[in-house]
Length: 268
Length: 221
Image 1 (spheres, rainbow over the protein chains, first blue to last red):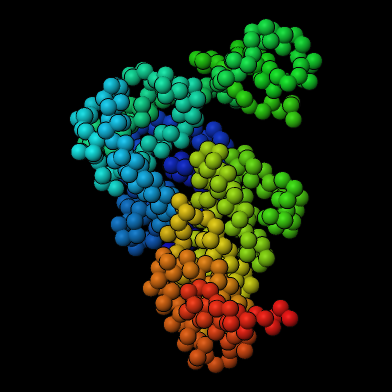
Image 2 (tube, rainbow over the protein chains, first blue to last red):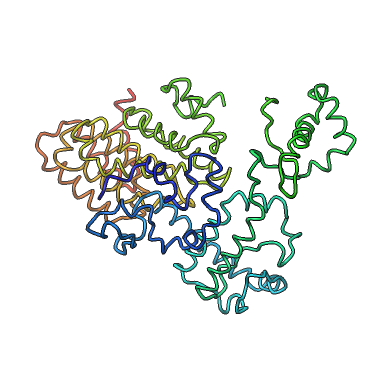
């Protein structure tokens, strides 16, 4: 086996290291999962290009990135363990889905995400159970969920406020879909999620949270004027953040600009 | 985290590194996890005392990262370093017996601590067995260091290992019986250790109280 798989490879092969957040900065994490097109979502068909040159040359030709069937797709322990974990999660999800099946099905029939051209198969009767398929789909879903856009989305729009068609909805991996249909749904879902990408200019995220209940508008005005004095007050952390956000407000062009409970470096 | 030093035995690191590790434990996404994993692996490969419990700090960082952002960066780097070292274990053993013993101790400790859904990581099972089988080879049995390492690991994770692959455990114990019986040049300490572990496994991974008295009471006195 080649010894070339080193931990440091990830730096050199950033763009190839397709699926995990091992980039040098937090933000490359976001970019890597950006809409690169089908290349990203076809994780299995990529043949794990990031690892192709770590394979023994007797398995593949140097240029080829075909997966090795003998040892499985990924021979590195990190990936093996992740796959193992995903497999267990998928099985657990399957069990849950079986039990909750009909209940969920009713709810889902009411909502129809624009991307779902599904043959509305009834849960339990016609559930997708092929492990390989479920694993692949779960990977695609995980890539999408592992983005800053998704984080921001779920913080901003709680589930009960989601409107079908307007808000992206994670495709249901347990439904029977053709491969094409599924891949298309994933693509559309990812595209929709991009509406929540962090704005390019900002270095900080701003999200409106329950701060809005704690502060009334008078406080905001006061804060701007009396900033130093408020350092002692109990509301100081959230107040300061409102202050900083209103300052940065002008810099950011993001659609909802909000306050987030981030740590202000000045307040230790 | 005042008790951090004792809990994770990080006193052996310099102050800056200690700070880095403490940050990794609390806020993993804010540090370079690849660097952290290399630090921990490198230390484990030379500091035997550290390698015995390094799994703990690794486990905590894995958990912290998972909790913080569902990340697996640290774990992945850790495992891939382990794999790299595994591939080079024979060279390591030739170069430094101590380094080799540290490696085995470390990988077994990781196996012990890092579970996936409370199950041992499948990817590590055969490699761990390979390491133990190597320790049970005739040339290794001649070194008390290696015998000591072997029996220690069996005490700590033998039962778990057997559960996930009993056939390999059987094979290992064939080697141990042969070693005990036939190997010339074993020190009496080595024989004692082997006998004890044979009885230990035979007793369902525990020693009967009388056996315990035989092997351990003298030490206590």
